[in-house]
Length: 253
Ligand SMILES: C[S@@+](CC[C@H](N)C(=O)[O-])C[C@H]1O[C@@H](n2cnc3c(N)ncnc32)[C@H](O)[C@@H]1O
Image 1: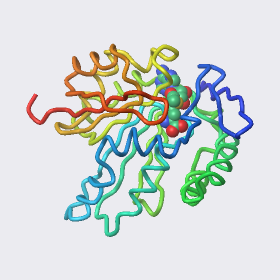
Image 2: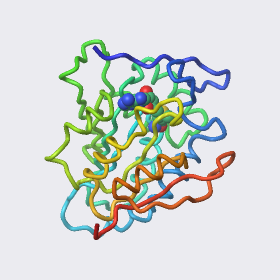
Image 3: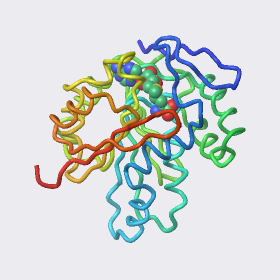
Image 4: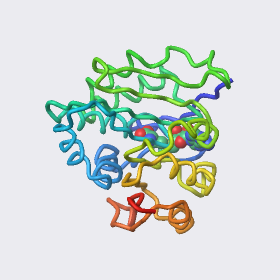
């Protein structure tokens, strides 16, 4: 059976994880953080614009560890939908062991819609399709495929432990991911989301040339990702964060 998120609500309306004693996103400005850490470091939306000229519909694939409130997904979709004539589907796969129940997501999205009104139509579209109840999710049936905006966006939610869920994608989905967002809770509080076996699986799922980024600059994360085959650099963070990591899977290993 699935375990849903245990959340405490801050006065600002933002969620705080009781299980992990950590924030889902920066309380300094989650929208700007998602744009900076995950979109900018993966050269979005520029890479989205280049796809506008693509003739065949090969989906553009993003993989995320830690769906949480879906803020990174919402911000990505916001930018994706800005690009006119996109001849391509966005396939966004996200793994989440402790999903928010629909009523929790509704509460988060009322705050998001207040703080970032430009996201409100995406919040509404996702809520319309988000599973009504998670109580019938068992350990075998953990995948939810959700088509949004007439199929322009495909959201695949893997409600399971990251390593177990992503390992199941191999070998069929090896070398299919164009960009990866690593967004577990802080490594010291959530080591299950930051270890070499998981990094190796993620690297195998990524295409040569795929981008990867994360809010942490922890040394063992950097070393683990390099060992898994990524070229990495530290770049300045946003707000209180001094440094973050961005990288690519080299074209020639
Ligand atoms: C920092 S939050 C993600 C924030 C999210 N990307 C957002 O935009 O709201 C980290 C997420 O990782 C999930 N998580 C923690 N351990 C996990 C595991 N072993 N497998 C999969 N998900 C896990 C947590 O439940 C939490 O939702």
